[in-house]
Image 1: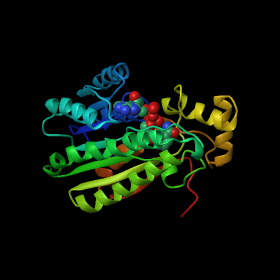
Image 2: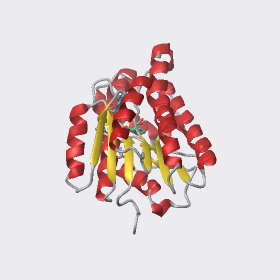
Image 3: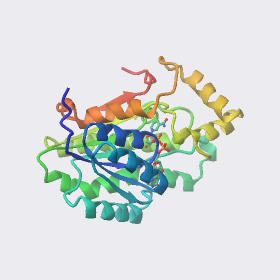
Length: 266
Ligand SMILES: NC(=O)c1ccc[n+]([C@@H]2O[C@H](COP(=O)([O-])OP(=O)(O)OC[C@H]3O[C@@H](n4cnc5c(N)ncnc54)[C@H](O)[C@@H]3O)[C@@H](O)[C@H]2O)c1
């Protein structure tokens, strides 16, 4: 099947690891050029090298996407390399620090807002006018199944992902018919999001009073996923690439679960 992505330029935030990195590789295999922003310089250099092995361009910028100044600097650096802007925007950057509700201070709520919601708002606000100049364009936002079906924790992260879905729908209505706007809502996907110090595995470990890996297994049992396992980043990347491609030409304003079956509602 023809994705129509060859020669297109795809900008991915949070592209140095996990789902963003797998997504960069998946687009490169479709012969799309990629523009990658992350604060992890080493990871960025690695993924850019792997992308170039597919004989497409990889433009990179190091930036902290959780601040307005960081987004501006990162996009300034990328737009010097691709002044016409991207054909496809993947708002992927995000993260959480799971804590019970009573232990989440204002500072963490504000940090979750800045990283998970305002990064997407700021990046999209800057790039949208350029994307509106193109014949067609696509945006895919990386939300979470927790934004559709919250668990006891983390309430802060889930709330930001719910807000991201609301903005996805709003933008899809505003920007049609030229720009399609969709979201993926991944379930648990094993990446540095879980495994890094202070990541989801350690957060659950302190909530359940278990070692990190056992805490993750415990959480998976509670969630009763029909597919009975965590996903991997490539499984989310495949759906992101589909949504950005011509194969999804009649798909906009949708939220695609990539979640092992976690969502129970119709
Ligand atoms: N892994 C999961 O289980 C899961 C589930 C649902 C949704 N998601 C969402 O998928 C997206 C990607 O998650 P992942 O699992 O690949 O996570 P990850 O932690 O493996 O990767 C996130 C990337 O974002 C970068 N990043 C983090 N903060 C940044 C900042 N302030 N500025 C610039 N770059 C920054 C990191 O360096 C990293 O490269 C996130 O939005 C996350 O909320 C993940």
